[in-house]
Image 1 (tube, helix red, strand yellow):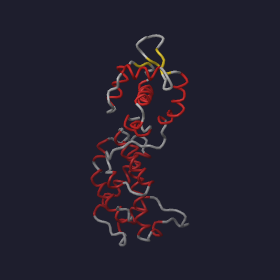
Image 2 (cartoon, one colour):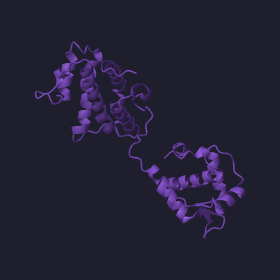
Image 3 (tube, rainbow, N blue to C red):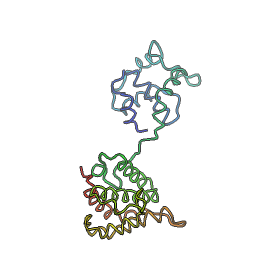
Length: 246
């Protein structure tokens, strides 16, 4: 977890100096596994977060005595402090879940501009964040498969927005045909009226297919980089066709 996120989630800026020190020591433990702290280290943790340098004598007194007591002197090193076990267990109970996040996807527009293409459709936002995260972490097969999926989603949404999605439904009418069939229809669809970017549609489809189905193929960064400009042009056009532009 980034320290800026921890500060925000715990509202650390509004806490007392003693509480700041206690919580920052817990953060440091969770990130680095260190269970003992010197006052110099505690002071440095506070400074790194943009807080004022504490009076270390006063802070140490507050941390080890009185109603705010949360630390004991270490039994192995007299200049170090360590958490009172009950205090530590309560911190783990209250804050430990911050390090068990199954929802947040860390990304920063590494491949697709999130400020432009993330909007009020949460399922689209999630795909874009996953694509960017995969690309940023060298998971190019994952990125390729997700890019193919986003491409397919946007095509279907475009048909739906234009009221012509019956053209790409299965014979039973309960779902949509395979992407290959959708692309074939889209290229010549006079209602959709696509630009020349339609000539790249099979490339977007195939790179995802190779990553998903080929036994020996593995995508590399260049495979994604080679199509990213045309992919962005496709996003722009299909966002317009699907009525997704902010």
